[in-house]
Image 1: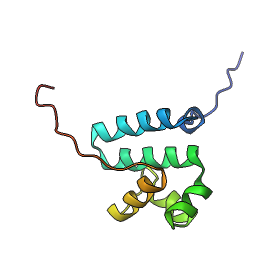
Image 2: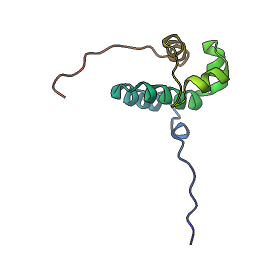
Image 3: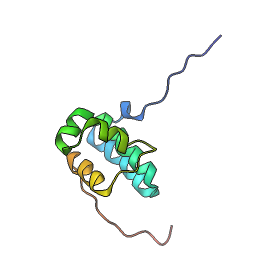
Length: 98
């Protein structure tokens, strides 16, 4: 008996703003730039890449390229995407007890 599998796509489960925020929060907590870019890409797909492109003033192709795990988006691009998602970056102190 063969088991059929499909690739896991977290974007399929990010169906509300709270889930998207939690997903991004986890990526930002780790602090890895490629993980953050990839998480922004996942949330962008869940949100709707065409709408995000329109809201951010960037092309869909530029968004896909910048927000992939291999992408290296400029900080200005990250800010445009975050704003288009209706979010803002908010610095918080690192918990020294952790």
